[in-house]
Image (cartoon, rainbow, N blue to C red; front, side, top):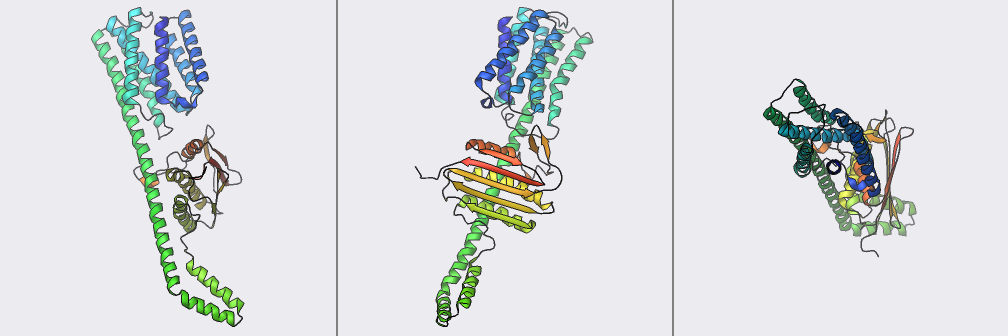
Length: 421
């Protein structure tokens, strides 16, 4: 009995690692939590070996155990329901396989070992095939309805047992059928999560390609203006020389200003020299200029900063897209952007006006955007949560304030200049 209890605790441990990223939990904290879970479950089984009491107690203990992991409460409840549901269905199958099923009696040693083997087999199937992407923090509408799948499966089994079903073959068939039904549905849902992740990644790549295309257009137009100025440079210099000989400094100043205006490309808002940043900012700020009233941008970064273009796209693409959309609906229509680098530290400061109330849950901001999930251009994913992951990747931090109808985001990243010691 003790060995089986330890084995079931190990199965719960493996299930939890299917649903949650264990790297975010201290190993010591996790070990202590599982020891408490095992001890509490074992003591309850000693005092009362009734099946229903053990099920209720284990359900509560598994849900409490899920609290040590990072994730939404709905996801933790889903994990707890799946684990206890699958284990109960396996226990029912083992009982039908060996004896007539009973709710008020205890388990024989053979039943415990057979149920443990079935639980372990189901966990391995879940780990290898059914759940590969659920560790990711992505949410969908009506996602929490999955909680009812294992719950309803167990209720169906209880109803059949309570109705006096004593056919062993039927009991085994229904139990295993419900187990397979749960595995198939979770496999399909997990594949949908994977497809959602790939769709978001494709959207990021498409935006990156669009920004590069826009930057190429900006560079070609700038090059065309340079060639035009070079072609007429002799005439321009002669004109300036004549003004200088005629002691006409104001005319010289005006003439040079006209030359500067001619050289200025209205589509080039950022020219820091960092191609990854400039290409993305020129694309996003061109959109901002067309929709907002007050757009301010200041960028001062090295050309070869050791941050990948993909990561820049996630940070600036997500934040600026959200900022422009929110500011467009506000009265001020303000967007402020500053990117600075000093001694290995990158500071990104984005501020925008907004109207209405921001939605929060568990201290996290929720998107208020409605969009077509089949349109990759509208996929925004988890937005700020994705940015937080990139900040963690570079050992940085993110600070968010939303006072006085201004959404203020400050990000610090630690990155070196490529080639520097």
